[in-house]
Image (cartoon, rainbow, N blue to C red; front, top):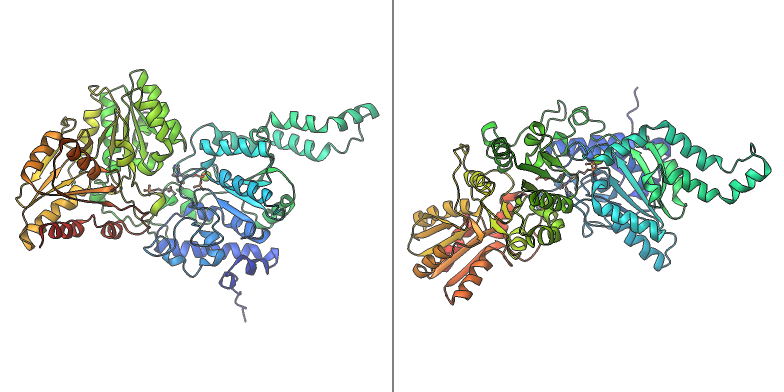
Length: 636
Ligand SMILES: Cc1ncc(C[n+]2csc(CCOP(=O)(O)OP(=O)(O)O)c2C)c(N)n1
Ligand SMILES: CC(=O)[C@@H](O)[C@H](O)COP(=O)(O)O
Ligand SMILES: [Mg+2]
């Protein structure tokens, strides 16, 4: 009779259960954990390849360290599914990223094992350093602090700011560099190449081994030389290592590179490093998508593949082929390439999101004019500013949420100098399952307060295209921000001849007598539907104005509207506070005009994760919410 192997993962409810196992059991735990992630994520989509790549590392960390007393900090957090499953969330994992379900990223309120909330990149070393310094000040000497950061996240400036500080502090901190030689797209810039070089360089590893292990054994030398070497051991080590290793130059002790898929060896190394004081960096080599053939082969698609068949690896697209064309990001990517073919001054810039924003189209065709600058939003903005000083036409595409990183650069490097940089802010508004760290809630508010910047938000694909066209004509002598949402709009045949759009000009899309609905961006699509429902079901006649620009506002149009309507409903898929509705109110206050104004938008709290349709409903900014607000205002 064949003995059925006992499932280990089923009995793991916390790292304490994991610790009851023998090291030799750990490979089986890893296999089961990997299988579990594949099972669940194939039917309930989320980030995929990154978590598969750190299965062994995750098991080893929770096996060796005394979590949650020891503090484990994940960078970005899209790779932390294994961590969630091993720390009490296995049975809830099927709710990952669903409305009211667990978050796709570590969150402090979700578990005591989630030491730091993440979603944006390159924060782990800073946060871990803060924890290490706090432990030191509180005399909690038993506590270990570990940050896990990817090679992509390591391209972020913040990571280096933290290394610099940590080295100086001599903090007791272990940084694990999870090097899979990929970001979402291939890791851009020289750091990736540098890591590859040290991983491959036998000469470096040999020198390093000999220096660390061999300096004590000085039998081969004469007495005077031995004395000299012993006296100057530290300086010699530094001389040999610092010049060869970037991390040693930051006063970290560098260990590795080691195989990140050998779980037993990982536990041994982690155990060895545990009690070495000071800042340490362990370089671990892993494969993104490890253990799922198709994910290993197409690491970009399987970063976050959506639904897929776990047997064949086929990805089931949520869009039908024709609908895929509607995605705003495709309109951006194709239009940029089209414009760049006509205007040789155009340069493309993306901080590590070429596939996400579709700038990959331009990068493939024009590699010298389109740049993936790594996870470096601040640099991306100032790089664009530099290009603009020399008469180039930079299209700097950054997700709305990640642009938050570069606020000073927008103000200091672009706006004060009034440089005509074209910002394209993708993923404006509620993005859905990624949740509060990723919603593009604030850009309308943060952009409109900055002098000199034109702030526009197209309602549909054609408008996006025409705004991009208008922006690069060379007529604008100032920066412009064009923001658009995740996903698709409502026009399939958007590839029409370009038309110039008047800056600061809105448009009336429907006429009505009872109230005026003023929208910006995608909200206009919901408003159009709402106007129909109001007319058909509620006998309310609403006029709809797509204002297109938050700044400058179409004052002429606004004056006409305010003359005619007593009831004004503003709608935006951005924060109400400081947003488009606020701009309308400020205008009214300036002109001494009054009306009954109601503002719909993202309320003053962080919106959870879940399907976008649900989140738009929760915020009351979908068709139904607009209808309801209009009825309430009209007293019906
Ligand atoms: C500030 C910021 N910019 C961009 C992103 C989008 N993003 C998420 S994961 C990722 C790649 C990270 O690469 P790496 O750290 O190597 O992790 P891997 O996916 O390879 O495990 C990027 C660019 C982000 N989360 N935060
Ligand atoms: C973890 C992260 O920041 C990205 O993977 C993000 O989830 C991508 O978002 P999109 O799916 O909207 O491109
Ligand atoms: Mg990586």
